[in-house]
Length: 300
Image (cartoon, rainbow, N blue to C red; front, side, top):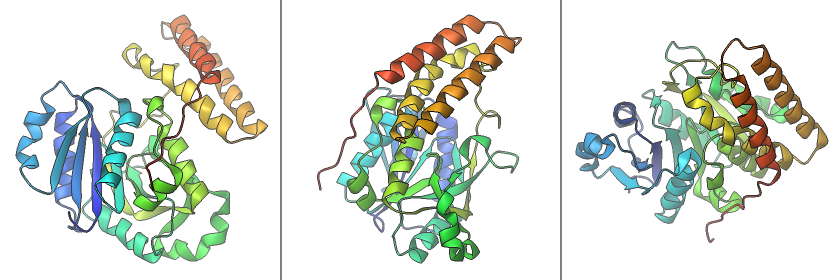
């Protein structure tokens, strides 16, 4: 075990991107860490593609046996890492390509903060060097209380994506694990909100990763390809839960206003399949009202 730090990559049927991500991790300037690949039962030859890396004691591989989605994969990996004794966890998708100093800068921030934080997150760029629209952290209203850290490149935030998110075993034991029932969508927003409610959390501007998404356009059900519509059966359901957990009427009003705006965009869209999209969206909203997943905790 290297310095009690582990990078966790959740993958599913993207063997070439996974290989690129592993290569980038092996080029990190901070060397004392292990790598854990959580494979959601890929069928594209993922294991065979990375088997030569697994021979290296630094890289571990675990097949979940089924496609648990991103949420289930991260819960699986985080639980395994904590139970294996790692103190610090760095999680990412398989299309996350860290720049060489990404982990070193996170560790520098960990040192500056004396380990007292809910989570740390990297600056996520798209392939062209611009900020990745899907991975912009949610700045905390309390950032003004920590302005002395801005000169260190740290900005207080309250939510981030799982594209390069860093936290400690102690935080996991305190707030529990990500909710596997989310499957995809919103699990990162829900989990990082729990972490930042526990302790102040920070955007680390000097830690940079590249997110190799197909495009740098925010998801939009009115414009999305028919093959990708299945994800929206989870999105509105999960975000209903996330907004309800905020515990205020304004949050739910904003949720319903978002549904209203998406309805208008679908109806005005020139794409086909309008009624199918509306059906998926409203069915997902209805499911949200009955969605009451339980947070799983690791025994302390």
